[in-house]
Amino acid sequence: MFTGIIEQTGTLVSLTDRGGVRRITVEAPGIAGRLREGDSLAVSGVCLTALDVNPTYFHADLAQETLDRTSLGALAAGARVNLELPTVAGSPLGGHVVQGHVDGCGVMTALDPVIPASSPQFDRETTDWALKVRVPESVRQWMVHKGSVAVEGISLTIAAFDGAEITIAILPLTYWRTNLHSLAVGAPLNVEADILVKLAAMRMQEAKKRQQDLTAGWLVANGY
Image (tube, rainbow, N blue to C red; front, side):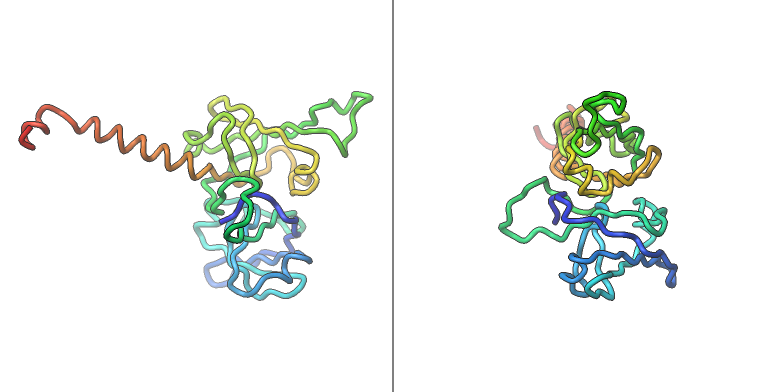
C-alpha cells in the first residue's frame, strides 16, 4: 500500500522488449539503493516489482495489462517518473490509501499558474497551479468533489468535477517535487480512484440490486 506522497522522481533510461513483457530501466539515486530484488514500489502510480537493483538503477517488467491500462509503455527515454516506496505499517498516512492499481489513463488538458504569467506578481517558483485532467469514462463514477484521487501516483484532492474533467489545485512543492512540471498539455496521466469511494459505490449497487429483487413474486416464492 502507498499513500501518494512522492519521495522523489527518477529518470526513465530505457524500455526494451523481453519475451512478451517490456522492461523499464529507471535511474533513481537515493531510492534504488534502498531496494532489494522483488520489492514493490510505485512508479508514477503503478505498483511494480524491482529487478536487478543497484545503488543507481532499478528495472521492472511491464505486463500487457500494465501496458494497456497505464501510460508507462508510452513514455520515452528521459521522461521523469514519480517514485514512492510502500508505507510501513504504523506510519502516518499523509495522503490517502493508494494501491498502485491504476484504473485508467486520463489526459492533461491544462496546467496553468493561478497568477497569470503576464502579472508583475508572477513567480514561477512560488505560484500555485491549476491542473485539469480529462478522466476516462469508466472512472468518472468515482470522482467526488473534495474527494481524493491519485494522479501519476500523487495524492490529490478534487476541487471541481464537471462530469468529464477534474480540476485540482497544485501547490508549488508538489509542482516541483513531482514530475508535473515536466509534463505538457496532452500528456497521458495515470489515474487511480479512491478505493474507499469504489467500495462505497459497490455496496450501494449491491443494495440497489437487492431492493430490485425484492418483488411480490419473490416474497410469495419464499414463503412471505
